[in-house]
Amino acid sequence: MDINVGMMGICLGAPLMLMMFFMKPGGRKLIFFLLMGFVACAVSDRVNIFLMENLEHYSAKTFTTYYAPVVEEIAKMIPILIYTIISKNKIKNRIAVGMSIGVGFGVLENVFYMITNAAKISSVQWIFARGFATALMHAICTAAVAYMLGMAYQHRKMYITGTLAAFTLAVTYHSIYNIMLKTDWSGLILFLPIVTYAVIFYKEHRADIKGFFKNRALKKDKNAG
Image (cartoon, rainbow, N blue to C red; front, side, top):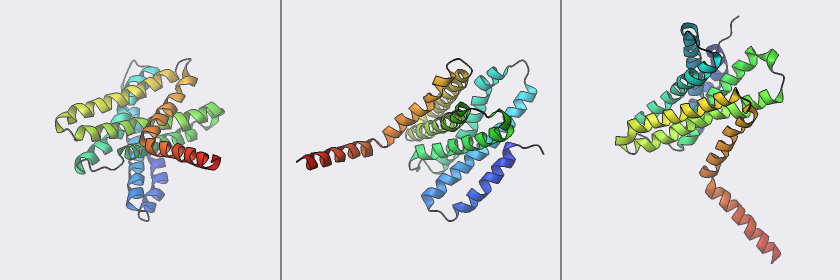
């Protein structure tokens, strides 16, 4: 039987959807957007296949550089765009919402690649690349879009330009990552999403981190005294 991303998305998403009804609103919302990531992955897969079957005179490198990032970032951005408009930007923790969509996209894509390329998965680098780099790259791109759309919506005159800027940033980041994977710098570029994630994590939890080290310093001084 020919396995496609949509079928796998239903199998993985159905239990998560049923679990949503037993969760608190905050967790329910993140699971919902995770499922939207599944949908975005399935839709972009169909579009990418259509383009590959109908476009001429392109290489795999050209497609992954110019076409795939555009298709995938549009698919991931649509749920955020719709929700931002409907909720009038009343989205708490936009970065978490955006990352949920990106993580859902990356998880479904990883599972599909693992099943369809099981014979080729023989290195720790491949597992590291898919789990800690590529999937994280999808999450970071969508988190950036969610954050920028929220900022743009607060200034209505900038909403259109802000949306285009967010989309351009995500596609550029995605394209650079895909390009570098095809070069001799592929091992180094795998750390780009991890470093970016560390920066975002510090920004979101800066106060907690400073408080943690401050408390440790106070306890150390108290014990020394």
